[in-house]
Image (cartoon, rainbow over all chains, first blue to last red; front, top):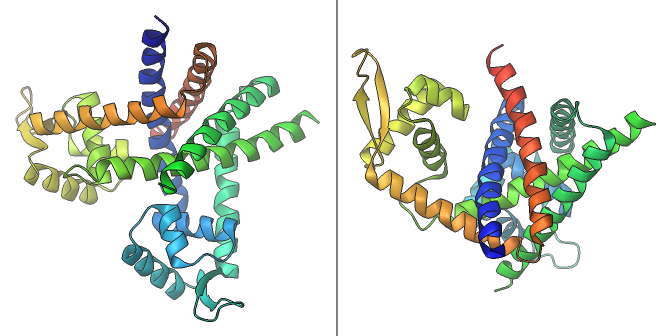
Amino acid sequence: MTIDSSKKIIVETEKTLRNISGIIKKNGRKILHQYPITSPQFIALQWVSEKGNLTIGELSHKIGLAFSTTTDLVDRMEKNDLVERVRDQKDRRVVRIHILEKGKQIINDVVQKRQDYLGTVLASLSVAEMENMNEVLHVLHENMHRLDEIEENK
Amino acid sequence: MTIDSSKKIIVETEKTLRNISGIIKKNGRKILHQYPITSPQFIALQWVSEKGNLTIGELSHKIGLAFSTTTDLVDRMEKNDLVERVRDQKDRRVVRIHILEKGKQIINDVVQKRQDYLGTVLASLSVAEMENMNEVLHVLHENMHRLDEIEENK
């Protein structure tokens, strides 16, 4: 019976998560529309902003796109003055992607707008309810992230 | 003080949600890779499968893409035998998108794989924890959906 009830919850939760993702994507696209940047460029920019100067190989791993697709993406981002390619200080053969001021500014702006959006979405919740939601999402993310790391190291 | 603490929670929750979305997207892409369908085609197919025969206008609204982009998408989906265009029974001037057997099969397969993935992600949770997560995500989705409807009707 426990297996049946978990199965039923999983089916519901998967659908809800899929719908949430869809709305986040649609809303994210609406926000990005105001900036000279595409959705894949924004995703790549977030990784470079968060993890520091990544190589193209590391970035392609993070975003789950092929190496050649990631190279094209970085080319367009460089042309767009969002990032620049820099030589690694320790190993001059290694090229790393460095975020530029314009890239940082866009990340900050977009994240601020996403926070404003979420603030509006959750306006009717009490602080306790928000804390519970935050906690639950944190657990979900931790579990996803752990599985992701296992998959990556396979 | 309440405003400050909600603000802090919102900042955290937005980041966690953004990360969850990123992992879902990456994992979804990995699953879709096994099928002859792109990510935008899958999103469109889900809407047609769920809401029944939509017009291109209705579909473009749901996925948040321009009318012309949605037309191109439906052209490729039709070529791919996922959907067909049918005349509305009541108003022959209206064209609706009808999902075909191959489209239904792909939706079912992909959703099943996403459920399996989520089952693995949440394997360590108790049924009570899963129920709480399901409930919280439901509240989040309801609130997002409500705001989305308000935005659409503006």
